[in-house]
Amino acid sequence: MRTDRTFTMLKPDSVEKGYIGAILEKITGAGFKIVAMKLTQMTQSDAETFYAVHNERPFFGELVEYMTRGPIVAAVLEKENAVQDFRTLIGATNPADAAEGTIRKMYAASMGENAVHGSDSDENAEIESQFHFAGREIF
Ligand code: CMP
Image (cartoon, rainbow, N blue to C red):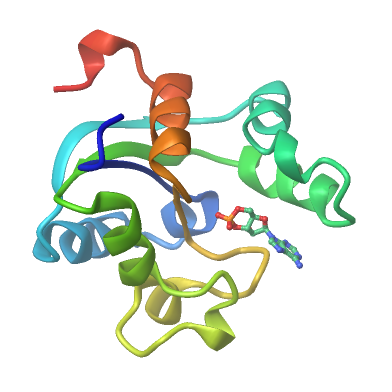
């Protein structure tokens, strides 16, 4: 299992507010190399599958609605210790708890609309990357 890759999405709120460039600059400025990237939109079935682990949670319907309402930027990022370092860069799930200078502190509006996704393990980074990208789209 690789430990130098993670998967991210700039969620619909980030795209709607015009934050793509600023967030990508934070990501590459922190030493992550973009090895796959696209603007895409999740279908209801995509979002239900991607977030299946949360399907019993009270916020599941809201989460699927949010993640399907407009385009996202999906990307695979490469850096030593990628999963952990990226989670540090994006900050806590709830922007109110996120550290100063983190992407969620700077760009997220709320716990539900929290601007960016970051994989929580090397295994999920691989699964999520393959969910969004064909092998030939990852460099
Ligand atoms: P993330 O951690 O990337 O993946 C699960 C998402 O569910 C999370 O970001 C939020 O967008 C959303 N989420 C988590 N907890 C809540 C909550 N309590 N209320 C609404 N949305 C939530």
